[in-house]
Length: 248
Picture (cartoon, helix red, strand yellow):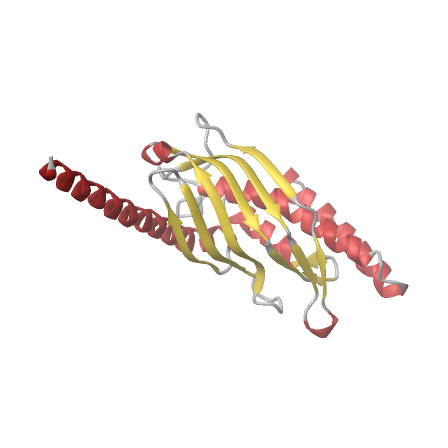
């Protein structure tokens, strides 16, 4: 009996050690994947500080997701998310499509900059669309390959904020909470490039809405011009994803 208890204790300790090791291992793979692939999709710096995912229950936390601005803008960042909580089907880690039940982005921060009828967020969308498009001579497209695919049942943004402008004149406004559902399925998952594009397409218009709502409170000619600029940016975004060329 005593030997059995000792054996069970050793077995439990071994499983615990293996579980901890696997959580760090899976988290390391997730971190490396984001840091290596995301900049190729966005055309701007993207870094993830850390990730930890349990292989037993699929619960994980990603920390410090930084999305840099495209070149030519004042701020170094376009978005920063302190924590992302996720729940995935642990068995799906062994399949071709990873099924994520729930993702919560806590207090994401966005920076919105404009230049006449252009903006940093519009430029990021254009770069993503370009980077996941058809292959260039001698190079495969970013969305090609036999990597893992994803099916996300729900993504929720909570407590998001948008900072409009840079420096002392910058204004920070809240964004309404946002929920995205059914991005890909177990049978027809999205690869990383497709997922990045789909999520960005749905989040960026909300950033612009929050920014335009704040600009509505600005009086005078400057406010009117800014609002008109935001409207033109929104039209440009529709053109990008409808395949039409932006109007001059």
